[in-house]
Length: 217
Image (cartoon, rainbow, N blue to C red):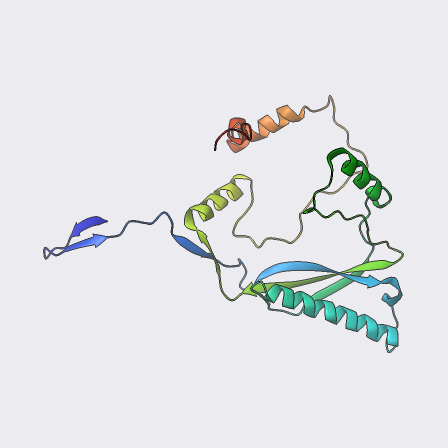
């Protein structure tokens, strides 16, 4: 407490700013934050004709998934503020589907298995399922609180890495256009490139190094 004196001689106290002060977190946009989801639809229900039983089953599947998605978000404090937008169908993403089980068996033989880790070896095939994407905004009716010091640190890190903290975050990562062939004259040393990037950001490599796990914190 900092003592102060009024002109009349009455003494008062002005409280200091608490280091544990908490501030509320709200979405950047008044309509809420944008989220996306995936709906798995059997191939037989895609591209169905109107006024058919197949189209009715397709509509029921989409509606049921959207309602379940909204209830799942609502249970976590997010409430739907607009009508969801559905797009598709899309082919499931490609991956090492044929080798997934082989990789899992090889890793389990070398390092063992953990009961708390689940491994996905089954994937959606384009001949069986198609993906539809749903997109909508959700808003919180009650804020989440965070310590002021943590909020200021998050803003500092975001601005340091060129991210606008006051911009509506997208549910996907914007990537540059892909190329079939990448060529570098003379090659690049990743350690040198990383050090040059740290210097531009004003960072030191020593600040990110950790000692042995046995060392005290």
